[in-house]
Image (cartoon, rainbow, N blue to C red; front, side, top):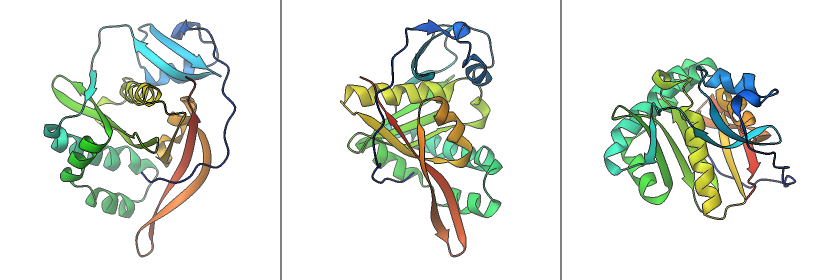
Length: 216
């Protein structure tokens, strides 16, 4: 995930009253497609987009700050997510080079310098999210394919947004992999432009630059 300036600004969205998932006529189908059960959830929606959430059922997983001993687990989640989830939108050559550049040691640096959260289920890391607190950049958010469809990504994004607001950040931006664009759009991010990164001669990886203004 790369950085860069975000052109322009968006008007602050109108805040709607808190409601439950099952009362949302317009967005319940999209959200229920991610939460594959019927348990009620408390959702706060701004302009039809999720801004914060609380799972009210018994938690299947927990969100916590990452620790140095999580490095290997984060690496394996990241690699597996790229190989299996991102493979629907990228060639095998792109996937091979992308995964080949991952190194467990780099996560240790990120854990020390950034706001780094992991999702944990039964003692195992099943997802992670990373926020650069200086630039307001979501540097990464990945969920293991084994835990997909359970709201892990939403909860990680909620944790990153909550932290960003606590730090006084007014906006967030990120480079989304092609397969994740619709996920971020449902969370209120707007697409700015498509980008490409050269991985090796003749091999490029496409992404979409996205932006969201945070309501305090």
